[in-house]
Image 1: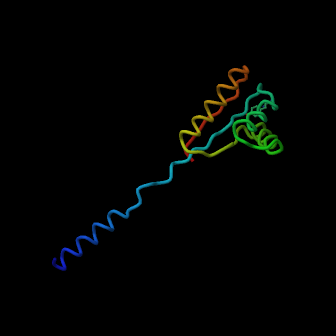
Image 2: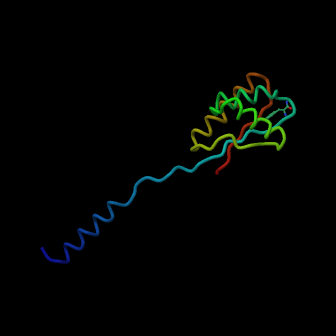
Image 3: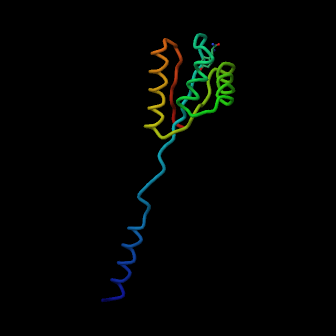
Length: 105
Ligand code: TYC
């Protein structure tokens, strides 16, 4: 075949090697302060749903208590949504007004 045809095939290979995946957008999960949820309940939430050790959970809970809120994890959209749902459901069942939200990182 001609030289011209060889060049066309090289161009096709380059097109096919373009990356087909991209990193998912990440979302911050935030826990909000309130005047009623017991401190120990918030510590338990951080340990149970965010896999944070006891000492660090106490520290983060106190940060929320003092500053009003804290980021407690950063996850892809579906995982962040699951965390928010789990926290809201568990808080509601225990009759605490604890609020958990997510926002794009
Ligand atoms: N402010 C609550 C209290 O004094 C404790 C608390 C901490 C509540 C963190 C919510 O996300 C929270 N009992």
